[in-house]
Image (cartoon, rainbow, N blue to C red; front, side):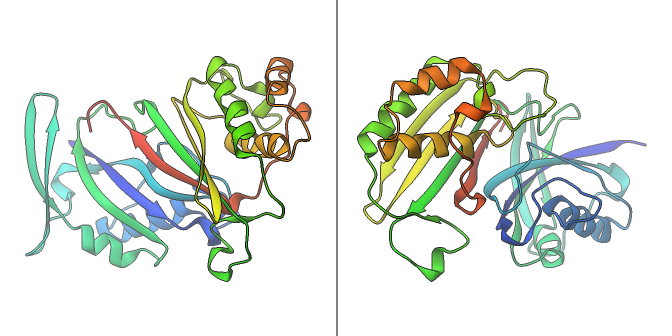
Length: 267
């Protein structure tokens, strides 16, 4: 049976979910998406995401791929969403029922785009860049409770940026990886690591080709040690070179973390 592969671009508020990936005894974003697709297509559906986000982590952009039998691909109603996409040398124009899928999803999960792609396109393995933001604020704000980390005291942002810049010199980030994680390599190529002062808070921007589990939250926790003058910026080198998770800072709360961008060579 001929299949058509689609990329779905998602955004979600992770507050109510135990992360992206399916789990046997917890509600996840992937579970809700699979259920909505199965209802729309009237058959079981499996999705593959660009990566996994942990409990309470948010995503402004996450891509997943799904295969749909060509004969059963959703047909658009009047006013459907039209998508133009260059797939290799072929220009594809199609209409898909974006609104119908969103109507089946909870209020805190949204599908922003549905894109037809070539049969070998892979949401996880084809991604060339992933970007995250970590938000923190200084004054109590009930509207930021699940979306930013409230901290007390002032931070030395200049020192934190000096420490963050050192990350670009290394590729092995074993010291920031969650313990007992089975991965082929702990190497990542970081292309941006920067703290931006927003006046009432800070935002940490980080981009890399890939990330290890818990890596961003551990990096933020280590930068916080620098910002509080508990360690000097250059001590980041010793922590990284030790390859020992216990030498890095604690993992900061998930509420402030956002997956913001995933890039592909053909999108």
